[in-house]
Amino acid sequence: MGGCEMPESSDDFRTPYPKCYQTKAFTRDGSEITIRPITPEDAPLLVEFFNVLSKLTIFFRFLRGVKYLTPKWIKRFTRINYARDVAMVAVEETEDRERIWGVCRIMRQPETTTGEVAVVVGDAWQRRGIGTILVEHSISIARELGIRSIWGIVSPENRKMLAMANRLGFSVQLDAEAGVYEIKMELSSGVPVSLKNPDAGGL
Ligand SMILES: CC(C)(COP(=O)(O)OP(=O)(O)OC[C@H]1O[C@@H](n2cnc3c(N)ncnc32)[C@H](O)[C@@H]1OP(=O)(O)O)[C@@H](O)C(=O)NCCC(=O)NCCS
Image (cartoon, rainbow, N blue to C red; front, top):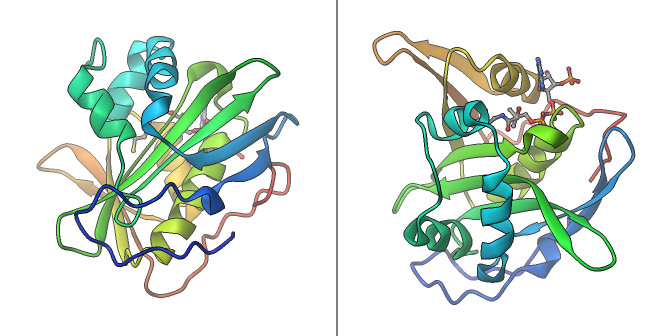
């Protein structure tokens, strides 16, 4: 990965778009995708992506039902402080248009070096390695931005995400009281992401 010259993390949303975090990858079945930071101009593509997600996928991503993305959410999801947070999309590019296939966010908790990770891949494109590619790439960027640990909340029924988290080297722990799993990874240790899927495109 390119190694962007990023300013110190601050609350400034005017950090320039870090094009150097853009890369090409291949899904396990050979489709070329672009992995890049999301931009405010992606709002229509994000809405289109959300609109084809199944209810179950939406539930697993948000841990509740969400009918549509409000303008406030769209703004929050697409307007990113690139020096502080990570928000990457996996995009299929054809001659005349782009289509989002997946999104991964690592949002820093204010004034900390801890970030919350959340990922979603559209139902039609799951099981092709895209979730893995997105999370791995997002973790590399989070490291560069000085994020030292990441965590996420996963529904106990979400076997796919639990399997993926295990394979990527997250610790996975049941929070019996809350009835959810907490996945965690320390990034400061320098331990590389464990998964190297030979079939999915490398980064
Ligand atoms: C979880 C999710 C992001 C995985 O994305 P994906 O692109 O399908 O993942 P990958 O193809 O990279 O698969 C990675 C690993 O996840 C596990 N996995 C993925 N799909 C699975 C399935 N249907 N059944 C069991 N394990 C599965 C496997 O370990 C898989 O590796 P393998 O196919 O080599 O066995 C995707 O299923 C999704 O968007 N789910 C709904 C939203 C969600 O759960 N988000 C998590 C909130 S933190």
